[in-house]
Image 1 (cartoon, rainbow, N blue to C red):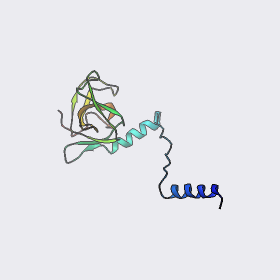
Image 2 (cartoon, rainbow, N blue to C red):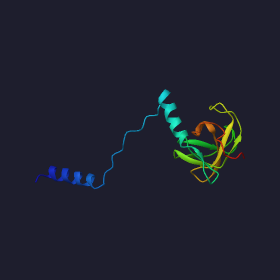
Image 3 (cartoon, helix red, strand yellow):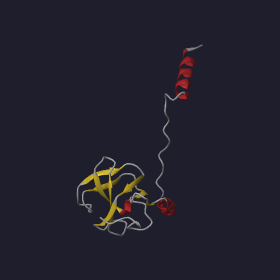
Image 4 (cartoon, rainbow, N blue to C red):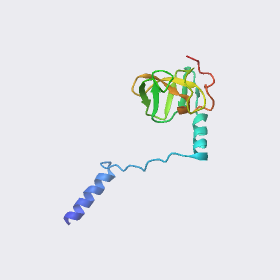
Length: 132
């Protein structure tokens, strides 16, 4: 067997048994109608559970702020697309067209305020979530 075939077989075996990984192409961000449909689907899974917390989809990379203001310090981000929120409170108006901010423990362990525009609720504040 030639050296080329031996290398090819070794690479094929490695790939077959998980030694190599293939990355999927990055998912496109929906726009227009597709974005509204995706947001509506995420909001349908959003709600306050028996623990009193709002469990809801959110924008990956959403920032959590020290206060309910973009001018305050950033405490961290939400690196996953589904999170829980302890309560809500009024703050600065944001791109969502309201002044609702949600309080949560960010993925780095810090607590922070996330503007409602980054949480996939159907209405703000989320029904049944306490104000803080």
